Image (cartoon, rainbow, N blue to C red; front, side, top):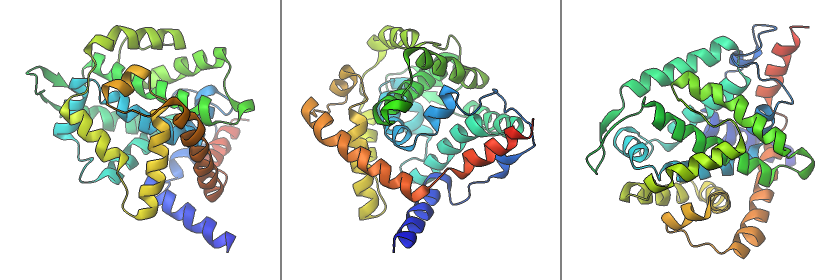
Length: 297
């Protein structure tokens, strides 16, 4: 019975996160290829992006935080199909992160080029009358910084304590993640935890919840194609609220007391994450990447 349950969890997660096909060829070869950014097992980026609970909660937190930039949210609201095909949107995001982290140089370059081409087609006018472009370097820096800050917060909250990063490793995470954003066209990308927090403080006057942002957060927190999926997403999004800065929760109108976040949301998300990790078993993507890297020896 446990074997059958584990197989069902693995199949459902693979379908939801990766579209049903891990495409291991992106990670397995050519032998010795270091990857586009030279990220290796044990590096902070590898550790953060390989920890399931932190990435799931951090991913939800990133979407909420990113929505507070009116121009970024206008682009998503006017051009994204996240409401009609949220799983497809998720597959694309997961594919980009896993490929740039664990994939070969060619595979990473391919997904970066694809995203850059998509960005050139995303432009328009926000409800406040300001023009926006998805390939705007400053907007790309915002999206990246909100994302990696959230991923790191998820890791530091949900990874087993011995596996959490030291302050120096947190800074190394920002440095190792920055070249991906720069390859997409971002500029002045924060490279330490302090720089990331100062960056958020500088942008704070520009950030607020538009009607589209509030609508997207409601959609996110209610997402799920089945009752079980809605339950899991609800627990994880509740936990992701605890990763947001206090001012971001206030802007989004989320009132979840600290005792609830720490005494209820966090333990439940930890339990859900452990169950999902048990179902998935050892990462086949990371195993393929390790095999490719070992080919250099």
